[in-house]
Amino acid sequence: MKRSAPTTFGMEMPTSAPIHPWFGRSLSRFGPVATGRFVVVPGWSGGSGTSEPGRYRLSRAHRLQGRPAFSRVFAARHSLRCGPLVLHAIPNGSTHWRLGLSVSRRVGKAVRRNRIKRLLREAFRLHRHEWCGGYDLVIVVLPHTPRRLGDYVRWLASGTGQLHRTWEDSGVSREEGLSAEGKNVEG
Image (tube, rainbow, N blue to C red; front, top):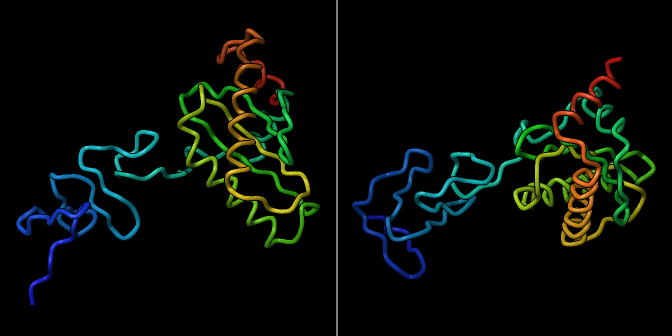
C-alpha cells in the first residue's frame, strides 16, 4: 500500500520530492513541513546561527558552567530584582547570551525547583535572540510558587533590558568589563 504524502497547509506534497537526510521525509519547495518534533522551513536556519532548521537549541555554548564563571558574574555587582528573580549580568564579549541558574533548597523541594528551572530555561531559550548584546546572565531564584511561562518571560525581558542599559550607561566597554572582572576573580 502506497503511503500518502504529508500535506502542508492543505496542499498535497509531490511524492517525488527528495528525501531529507535528517528527517527521512520529503521536503517540499512549497513551504513548511511539520515533522514529529518541529517545523522544517526550507532555506531557514534555526536560532543563534544553528544549521538545524526551525529550532532554538540551548547548547553548551549558551550555558554558564563552573564556579569561576558564576564567581565572575557575581563579582561584577550588577544585579536587578524582577519579581522572585534576581538577575546578575556581565558582558561576555560575544554576540550571544549565556545562562546560569542558582536555585537553593529554600525555594522548595526538588520537584518545585526543577519546574522553575525548566520554565526559566524555556523562557531564556525562546527569547534570548530578542535581547541586546551578549551577556553572561545568572538568575538567582527567591522562594515562590511556580508561575506561568509568560510571567518568567516578562520578568526576564524587562530585567535583561534594564541590565543592558545599566552596562551601557556605566561607560565600560565589553573588553574593559571582562578584563576588570577577570582580574578580581583571579587576583
